[in-house]
Length: 183
Image 1 (cartoon, rainbow, N blue to C red):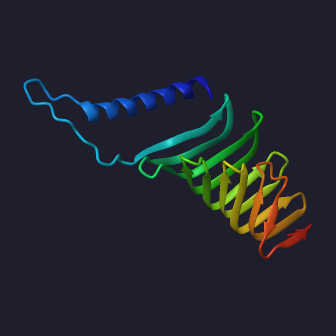
Image 2 (cartoon, rainbow, N blue to C red; image 1 turned 135 degrees about the vertical axis):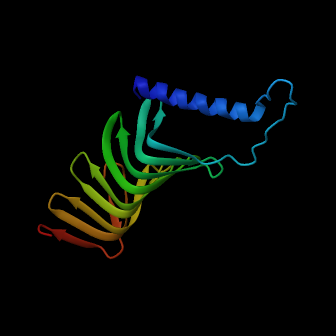
Image 3 (tube, rainbow, N blue to C red; image 1 turned 90 degrees about the vertical axis):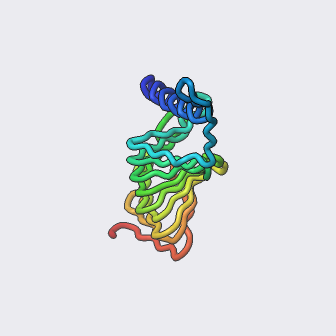
C-alpha cells in the first residue's frame, strides 16, 4: 500500500470515528440541556472511486477497485459497481478480474462478482462467466453461468467451474464442450 493510500485510509477512518463520536456524545450549544443521540441503525455509506485491499503480514492478497462502493455495516457487506480486482501471490499479481457488480462479505472475506465477469491470468488464460466467487477460506475461485475458459487455441465451455487463482487447475462441469483451434 502506497504512502498516500495509507494516509487516505487513515483520514477516512478518523473522519468516520469522529462522526460516530459526535453523534454519540455531541454537545448541545451552551445554556441548553445536553441530549444523547441514539443511533438505532447505521446508514449505508457510499463512496466513489474506491480501492479496497486485503493485506496480511504486509503482503497484498487481493485488491479491488470500484466505481461505486456501498458499505452496509448492519449486514456486514460491501456492494460495489463496475469493479476490477487483482489477486496476488508472493507479492506478484497473478490474476485480474472484471465485473459489473460485486459483493464483499466482511466476515468471511469472500468476494462475488456478477455480470459478464472476465478473468485474465499472467500466462494468458482467459475465463468468463456470469458469476464468479472467491472463497477466502478455500483459496479457490468458482463460478457459474455460460462458462468459457480459453488457453492457447483451446476453448472449454460449460455451466460451472472451480479453479485456483492462477487458473492452472481448472475443472469445468455441466454440458462441457471442448473446441480445439477455430471458434
